[in-house]
Image 1 (spheres, rainbow, N blue to C red):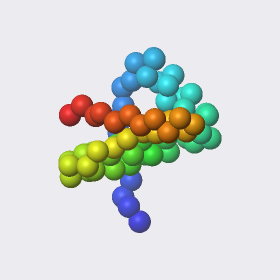
Image 2 (image 1 turned 180 degrees about the vertical axis):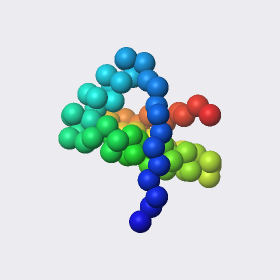
Image 3 (image 1 turned 90 degrees about the vertical axis):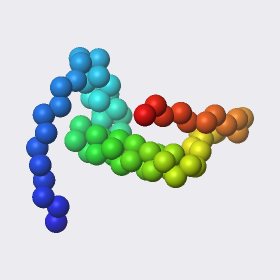
Image 4 (image 1 turned 60 degrees about the horizontal axis):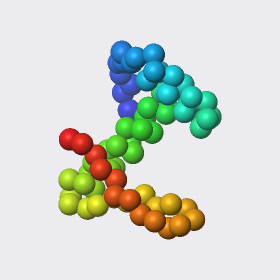
Amino acid sequence: MFEKRTMTLNLSAQEMAVVERLAEEKGLSKTALLRQALRLYQSISKRLDDGEKVFVEHPTTKEKAELMVLS
């Protein structure tokens, strides 16, 4: 089992509202939402570091847009 650590995170009211809204919409705790966001960011970051490109695709038009992440 992993050792759990505690971290204090200071967010603006707007940022916290986004976290709360997304957690509610996804049926997740705020902690679970942030863990999921970290895993997603880590996955995308690894692919970009490896020289891959990451795209999002519109569900009906199939139009693709490259995902850009600032370092």
